[in-house]
Image (cartoon, rainbow, N blue to C red; front, top):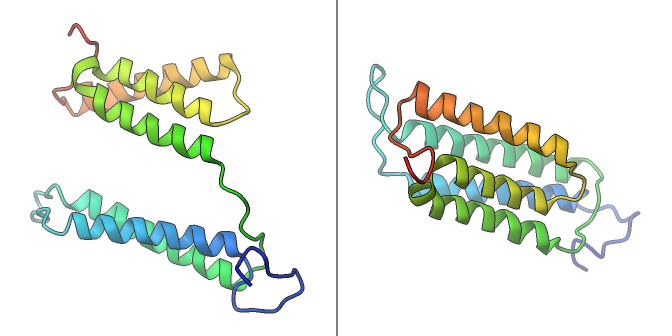
Length: 159
């Protein structure tokens, strides 16, 4: 019997298959990030290198994954259901579109496309709420990356 077909009253090692697999996915993504970034420079305590933040994020993913996996072993939860392919594909398309568009189209256009595709992945969105969210995210991204960090990112395609 697989994780999804185990009867509800069955006492086994895995009590919450969704949590166990979700935690495993988090931990694997974090471990992959640690492996990919293993050669990124850490820098010094006075001047942190480019590898510090990715490494912290990846260790965070591994830690959260371990906690969620432990929950799957200790707390009764739902089994594995079917895959929701639409959200998976739309979120992947959103990330890919952002990566491809950030240089030629600029921050505003690439973020709007990212947020629209992300919103299409869900079901319960309202146009007014989305417009407010998008405007706040664009303002925040501009304030952090363009104004605060002075990153050389185009804001619009013509800039």
